[in-house]
Structures are given as C-alpha cells and as structure tokens.
Length: 410
Image 1 (cartoon, rainbow, N blue to C red):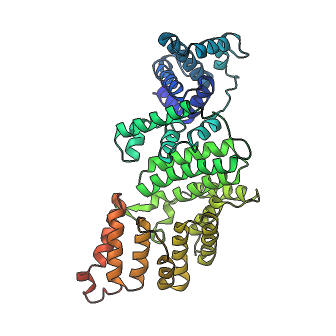
Image 2 (image 1 turned 90 degrees about the horizontal axis):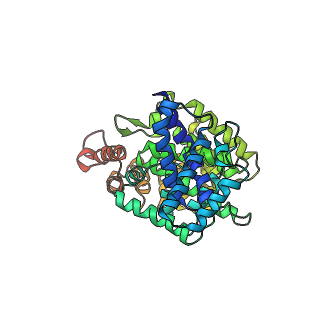
C-alpha cells in the first residue's frame, strides 16, 4: 500500500517533468508519452516489492528512455534517431544509469513543454487538452469527461495536436524574449480556462489541475508577476469552494459560511499577490487577483472594485469585465444604474450575463423581465447546482408567485 501511494504521489508530481525530459530527448510527444506510461507501469510492478528507488524521477526517465530505444529498434523506424539515442546513451556525459543515483540532477524541461503545448499554431481546444494530458497527466477519458465530449473525439483531438507539433516542426523551446509576452499570455489563458471550466462547471478536479499547473509555472517562472498573480487568483477563488454549495445548490458569496473558507489558502494567495505587486508591473491577472481579494473582505469596498474592473476592461477590452463592473455600480448607485451598463453589452450568448441581469431586474422590482432573464440563463446552464439555483429564482419571479400578497418585488 505504501509503495502504491508513493507511486501515485510521484505520478502526480512528476509526470509532467518526466514527460518533458523525454520529449527533450526523443523529440516526439507520442513516443515520449508511450515510454513514460510504460515506465510507470513497470514501476507499479516493481516498487511494491523492491521499494521506491533513491531517485524515482531518474529511475523513471532512465527506464522510459531505454524502453523507447528498444521500441525504436523493434519497429526498425527512425533509424537515424535510434543511432543518435544509442550514441548519446553510450558516450554521453551522463549515461542513463547515472540518472538513477540519488544525487543525479534531472533537467526540468516542463517550461519548454508547456510552451510547445500552447503554441499558437494549435487550436485553443487542442492546447487545453494537450496541456492537461502532458503537464497534468490526465487520461484521455478524464479530459473527454471534463469537457463533455466523446472519448473518440478527444482522442482524435490529442492525436492531431501531437502530429501537428511533429509535422510542423514546432520547437520544443522557450520562446525568444521578443515573443515571450504574447506566448506567456496564451499559456496563462489556457490554465485559467481550465480553472474556469472546473469552477463554472462544478468539476473540482479541473480546478485542482489548473492550480497544479499554476504552481508548476510559478516554480519555473518565479519572477513573472502575471504567473504569480494567476496562481493567487485561482487560490483565492478556490478557497471558497467548501462554502459554495449547500444541499446541491449554489450559495451566493454574501450568504456563504465564511468559517468554511480555507484561510491558509487565502493567506497564500495574498502573499503571492504581494510578490506580484512588488515586481512593479500590473497586468490583467494581477488586477483580477486584487478584485478577488477585495471580494473576500468585509465590508466590501465596491468603489475600489468598480475602479479595478474599469481598469481591467481597459486592459482587456472584455465585455465580461464591464459586466462585472455593472454589478459593482449597482451596489454603489442602485440596480437601475447597473442595468444601464449591462444593456450596452452584447453578451447574449453568456449565461452569467443573463443571470446577472435577472438579479438586478429582480432587485429593481421588474419581476416579469427578471423571470424572462432567469429563463434564458437556465437554458444556457449545464451544471446541476446552478440549474437548481436558477430554477428557484425562476419560480420566485413567476406570475403566480408575484400575484401573492407580500411577494411583489422579490
């Protein structure tokens, strides 16, 4: 049992690093992935009896590389690559057996791998899936389930992405300095998309995967303020997960039991924000992290929140930032003022736009319009907790309920 638990922990913590090292050696994600999977399978057979090796990561890399070379020999393909690998194994400065030593250092090439997975030549859905598979270690089944697509669809998506990387010669490298800001922004967007898919979709496993990826990026790029800020933002949101649901229903922030919040995680998020602010550069994730922190304070400073959302809207030109500013404006100047901001936005496809608008209409006493808006939000919502919450609001604003004495205006 102990060895099994240890292997699970190594898989969780080291899959991305082992795979990145193998991609750097083999130059092919598919080949590296197969070799890594074989190495972990061998470890599952041997470690329970033999015990965990002194350098588990080195053992896995060495075993996987040897398996890859054997596979290339058996298939009698990529002959030139096979010769190169054999020469490196026999005459290189550090033969594979040396990697098993406790003191051996395994180069950490996860940064190269994440930039490869998030290359702009790949479609966004492929970037997300490949990042979860290679850096997060999720199976194709798990990724397909998380994104509500059939296994075959996700399998083909991953295969196409790997082949495009190989066929297009996408480099396994950190981008040059002049490309780094834009490329890093794409990487952070992928990680935050994964987090929001888990948060908004009620799949806590994906929020955990995004935080895991965020921690890896923060370890690899400790001086990048936006990397630190994104991790802080995710931690501050995730700290409330224990209070976010009650009896299978969404609990609004103002009604949450604060004793269920993870204070240690909040403290960690705030410390990361301070580190990011000390770098002297303010990007969209730093602004969002500051907003998330303000939402955890009581009472909330709505004027500062509104001002920060205005800054965010200028930085990103995002109508969703304006939608969130409308909520703060409603808290300051009343629901009609918030509705005036919302009604200028083109977000008819976005479920949170309709639920936000419905809530402000309800607070303004415009129940008939609120009922319609709650209905549109419900039509666009797929997760059960949100559906239950919206169904209750829909019932509260229904004509039969509004006609009862004492119920007008919500």
